Length: 304
Image 1 (cartoon, rainbow, N blue to C red):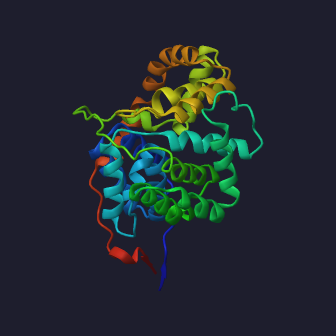
Image 2: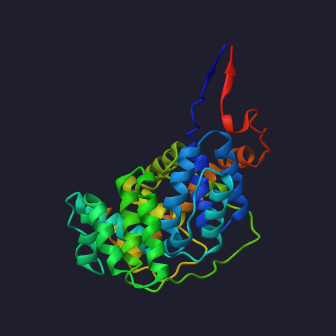
């Protein structure tokens, strides 16, 4: 006999569901997805994603962020995001700064401030020097707390664009008052088909089929679906960098905001219809009670 650590789940449907539910303020659905991912062993990803979701969806909350090994800490972080009005400026600035660092200059005519863009791009290359510099610019405890959180959790972000988002949050904390608000709540059931977007195999297949049906470029439908559906939140505070990213990304796909809205209005019912059955399966999968882990913290299975 020997003990073998099981492979963690990489169920992209549930991963996608977690962030979509947090964006829209569906706390109960966040709980379902969180527990399902935790039971399946997707713990390392969960810790990383709780950090990234906080900075992406509402960077001012990062000053209160504490994400440890306990499931309760991850639940608390995600519930805070779910309940809050969203401020997506760190997500927008981070994405644009990452692209700039990769050599893209096509966003320069639509960004609010080229200097900030270049600062975050450079911070990706020299994070230690950046944190020394940005800490010296902090003038409030709230700002310092966001910076310290960014410094503490930067290493848990896997992708460079996620790191850029965290660095952007630290910079924004020195420029604006740290303000949060409450998001809108609803008693309606979460639309599970929304989770099956471009981040899942099912969503990619549906987008491809509908793009052909409408004789539209796949890339255009992909980005229209993201900004007009996947990225929807329960309440959005003014986020100029997020709007700049949206304008830039849609333009690169050959779309204006109005054209994207028109395309998605035609595609949305077709996508929803194709995903209806798979969405119902996802709902059953996450909402059906799961057996607890026999070994608890050991997270190991016994194999003979």
